Structure formats: structure tokens, C-alpha cells
Image (tube, rainbow, N blue to C red; front, side, top):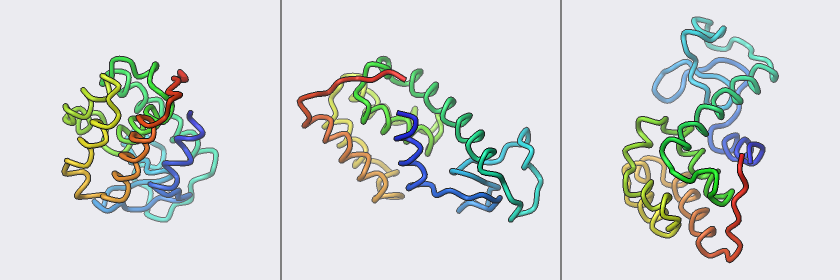
Length: 156
């Protein structure tokens, strides 16, 4: 699941082996990693090179956090089908736990295993209007889970 999530996030976030400013002018590196004051990259000038190993280290830390967030927000996260887990983790990665926790109807649908409603709730969100292509891919992934007769979960 982690490898699939990384591939998805590399497509959505991109991957940079240097520090840069994101769309909000916040220092970022790697796979959408917002540089924190505890990171060794903190305070470094834009364009500072970041090794592939460091990008992987930061990604692994971020994924551990977002999966932990999903386990807090979605009762049976570990029991959900892999595609649903990846979708939830990608959303938690993109939004952070505070913003993702506000998607009450979507999260309730995820808890209930109602993948079609979970997709519909994403489409009926401010996020959809802000990042329509990315959010539509999430919605379609959830609908595919709902249409798949083999909704086996794989725990992470």
C-alpha cells in the first residue's frame, strides 16, 4: 500500500530534490513535504539540494503521520479495501488531519463503507472546486471500490 501511495503522491505532489516555495510560499521539499522548524532543511535557501535518501526519509515520516491520522478519523481504516485506504491517506496527506476531519459526511460514508456516497461527498466540497482533477481521481477510485465485487482489505 505504501508503494502505491508513494506513486500516487509523486504524481499529485511531484517530487523535488531541492527546497522550493509551494503555492502558498511555504518552504517545501521532496514529495510535498512542508519543511518544519525541526527539519535540517529549515532556514535553508530555496534551491538547496536534498538527497534522494532524505526525500524518502521525509516521505516515510509524512506517510506514518497521515496513516495515523486516518486511523483516528476512520474507525475501520485497516479493514477498508486498499484503494479506499490509499484515497483516505492521500487526502490526509494533502489536507492534514485538521482540514480532513472537517469532511464529516465523507468520513461517515467511509466508515460505513458507502464508497459511492464517499465519492459524492468529495465532489460536493470546496476541495473539489480548488483541485478538481485530483479530487475527481479520488472520487473515481472510491466508485471503483464500490463497483468491485472483491473489496478485500489489506492492512498496513
